[in-house]
Length: 535
Image (cartoon, helix red, strand yellow):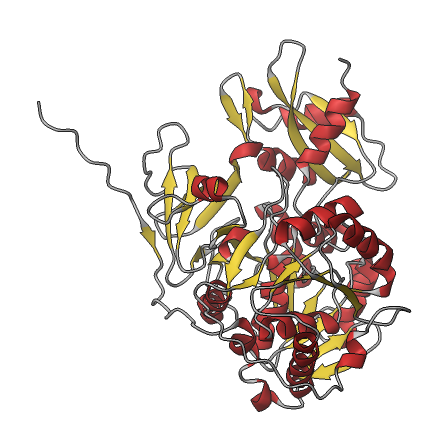
């Protein structure tokens, strides 16, 4: 009998030339050319107009690093940065990096218990927050028992202010940073499908990913980027902070998304680039307020962080007068980028999230057999490249489950790559609904629901019916003034999908729970479902 044919992976490779790994600390990779940019605005507060130019951003980060080092922040330490977007956020991030410390970014709306868990798990010894969030930070610090000091970016009685530390004369630290192994950032995975875990991203991971993105992100010194997605998430940290500041662009900062403020900022600051999540694209496509503003300065709109329906993207592009809404793909564990639709792509296929970045490889493997699949076959997306995380902090077993022995990171996302190399993401492995053996992708049903004129937002999860079968349930937010019924929703979907994909239950909500990045928090919907189901 002939020996079995060995399994040979089908590897999709980037069409772009490789980039050399960037062996620099992240503060050098981003601010290394700050002196050349000089008085060009680096950061502008969209609400107050306060401006920080490149020379001052560089100086402030050095002075704050000196003060933090003088108070004991050392290489290998972890600093927790707990703040909405502000001009101070990058200053603190790069200052910690100059000390050789890693930054663990904390959701501003985290509960005390959630915050404390992150502090203890990360080993953070200092918190930098803002006065409005001090109560939460103090409570978390008390619960964690590891915090030596809480500082504030603004001012609060009893706490040192970052503002007061910028004029000190302590010597600037010069730690011996190994970009390959030392951590720059320790963000926590979103927890949409499990317990949040510390994602160990080295200086090399993040800096190299910036170099991979550089040929495909067109912003430069003449561009103005609106930062409304949060810096604390890896998407905002990369696309709205590190990448534009590396390229000499101006970042216009909003502390949170408010549609009126968002549109006003685009108009008044002549924003050229917006990085968004699907809820923002939805608002731009459907909300009547959009028509009251001059948005003609926009050159690019990029959407990432969650699946975006192709029809919704096309509707948004038409309304804004853009050729297309560009998409991108990645995840926290990938620093985060692996795919981008190039701004100069003549006709990207509808719904694609892009082609592979330089120095990046992908595979598509069968969910049933683990065998490699070819073009236009759907399976789990695997990624290999220099942007793959070092691992999960203190969780070797979960790291090994995520990254195999050959260095392939198993994303948990389902997608297909066409013959021209365009990636189309279908859904999350863990979010697939299995109805009588058939796989139903929630994102497909959500896109269909969003096309209904009476639907403002929607989410779909699998729930159990009386026979124990998993069936799709839709959580729907009506457009203001709409009188949509559950039966109408069910009939609408049933007329447009295969029978096994039909929505079989509907619940109306005031809002769909989402992470700040736009991802639907299905775990919250599942918890809601469990609490309302009779035992």
